[in-house]
Image 1: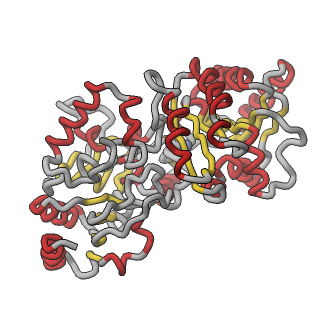
Image 2: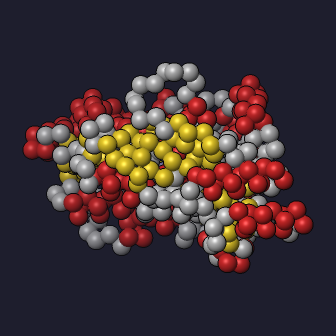
Image 3: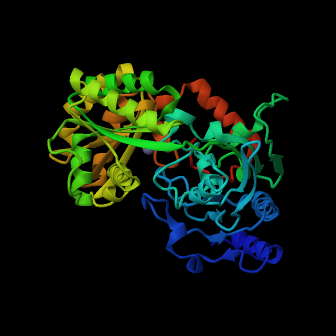
Length: 461
Ligand code: ZN
């Protein structure tokens, strides 16, 4: 550690309540990497503020001496955004947590950034409402991280991404300025919508400390169906049919390729299997029913029609919450499975539906030359045009060639990050999804809001 950093830590220790600052050895392994565990590195220290004012004091002091800061939430990211680089101070929001208020009439919830998503969801449910954002890491990921990465997840097809759920927020700028914009209204066109600067910008323009989120009515019932499709074309036809039949009631449309499905079934030791036969594609479909009885009959009629037309090869409707949870586990076990595959490698791409067949054919043709007999497992939120490609590498030497096939196949029309962000791991590929003018504007914003480059340096840009 440099003398400057030692002096800074002494300054911070004198200005903050005891226990706010932890040395690298006291902080434990948790703060050394995000969920990928790639390039794990102990931060110079970990600051764990309990209030916005403490966040502001920490950033003001870091700004003065140019100390780089890495912002940490639940550390469930998959792009290395929250993984420290050497010498960085980790700013953990884990103690700035808790739901502050709920306005059931307005359908809004005010929450601190370090609150786990599941806690905020439960607070909404207790009022008969729902916080619609939902993803597999709900127990660990935090609202601040969800906002900073503009999280997506399982219900984007119905409610949009996190951006659509944020009405207002409070953020601290790099120099310690507190920007309070805790707007609770759905409509507010009074000047620039500054909250957008902090949504999906991965903590590079400011640190989100609190937010006002939009709540929706809780559905009377969620119906879960599991469907096998005989071809990719049938899968697309199924999506179109489900949209036309259920409209806004279609809550999730989660596709799984056979190789991912078989891996998940084996990992979960699922017995019995959802279907007796084997099929090339599967989809988990969720309907948010406003009128449960009629909806079950409608869903069954819909599936019978698909089976008759050959669009579906097999189909079932979950008969209980337990059965629904079992089917969801097949889809959501991806995270645990990934850790068993060697060096875990996860792609998160999006592309127009019309380009999807050609993209998948490119993968089929070119990936084996890099991975040999190791499969590239595919699943994703097909309704959002978002695919996750997962594999276990034998060596890091395989990364560049695989990146070239996957990202190179999207250049000019797709996105190298649908919902996980850019972080440190995808920086080199950002220009495959963004034009020079877009990149220049991003740099302009960064230099205006963080002139000394202390906030999450080396991430995104
Ligand atoms: Zn996802």
